[in-house]
Length: 121
Image (tube, rainbow, N blue to C red; front, side, top):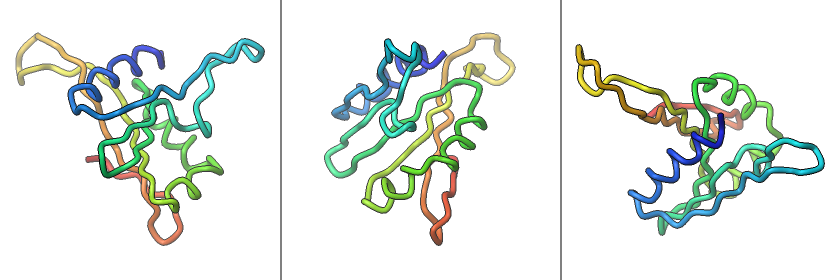
């Protein structure tokens, strides 16, 4: 569910002390959630950069495909902005332990020779 992913992302963004704005909204007429430019759930400013964050859960690969097909990604990146995918998953805190915690799988979306490239941090 995207809402849980956004809440987890906001907690981390607040820890980073970034300025942010939630750009995902519920469209009453279509009865579905809509992102800014169809890829940005949260817009962040860290003082030097403008970062669009796409939040998701275990459907990370579906979001990578969606981003590669999005017509607004290339102009967004060419304008000097950044885009990251934050895919939340539950992992063990310690190897061999039982305690679990939510951690993001963060990937940067970049333009390489005019092609959209996704690289995990």
